[in-house]
Length: 193
Ligand SMILES: [Zn+2]
Image (cartoon, rainbow, N blue to C red; front, side, top):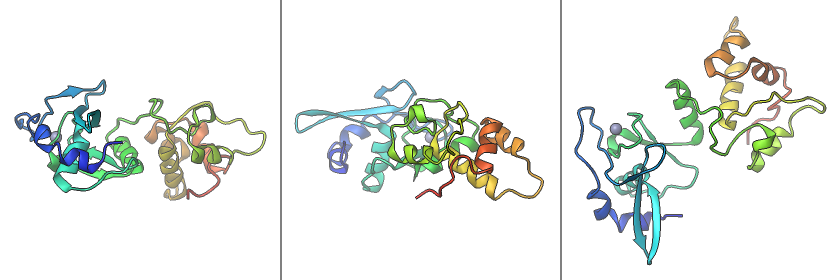
């Protein structure tokens, strides 16, 4: 875990790795990039190698705030290499999923750890949601991020008259069976706590 102090005491090194602002106002990170194109800020602290995503480091240096593990720093420019703080904002994982859905780059099936499908459950919260399946009901064979599942549930519960479950499944690119199962209370029966 990289603390705020770690990042702040290495801010001079971080700032030296910022590139030139481009026409869209994005500032690229010039250091190492991960597979997904996010900059990785690497430094030493207490003679240990440390590593944090560059846009998270930029956010910490700009705001002086500590980021906890559930905080997500989002790009309004959708450009993972960008470290311009004007393009960054802090949100929750649920905000991030909403943002992804709105921008049409939903992370269905991506191996990022929090899925509703039992086989992928690593998180106890997910397991207890999974336990909300009715006895004997075989869940749809798909995995979607738990946050997206709750967004779909909200949408079903608050939909206007005449909006079909099929249209919701299309909107979020999830199987119709899944939407139907939420709608009739077979899955996600419990409110999120
Ligand atoms: Zn940007």
